Image 1 (tube, helix red, strand yellow):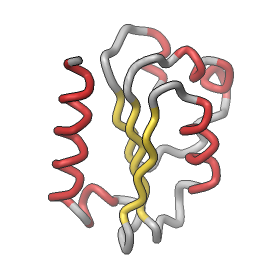
Image 2 (cartoon, one colour):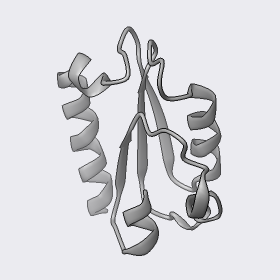
Image 3 (spheres, one colour):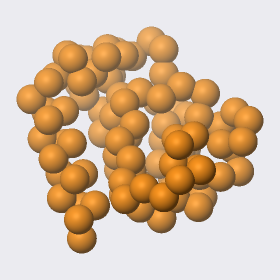
Image 4 (tube, one colour):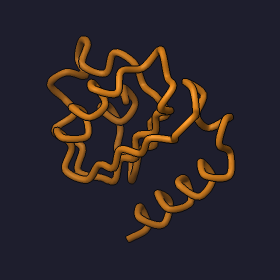
Length: 95
């Protein structure tokens, strides 16, 4: 997210980000006008689902996806689904 605040990007995939509203990021996320996909596992004990719902609500083009049964490393617990979601994001960024 810090990179996307400083440099132009076409899309952003966030895998269970933590402390997303700390520091300079707090006032910058509303500027994100590109597709953002946020992934969290339903059993994640590190990232906050409530915080990520709040983040998704503040972004113009965000999609929050919860991987049922996955932990903090949802991409590792559900690699095929993660791959599909990543390819979907790439397709959205090309539009």
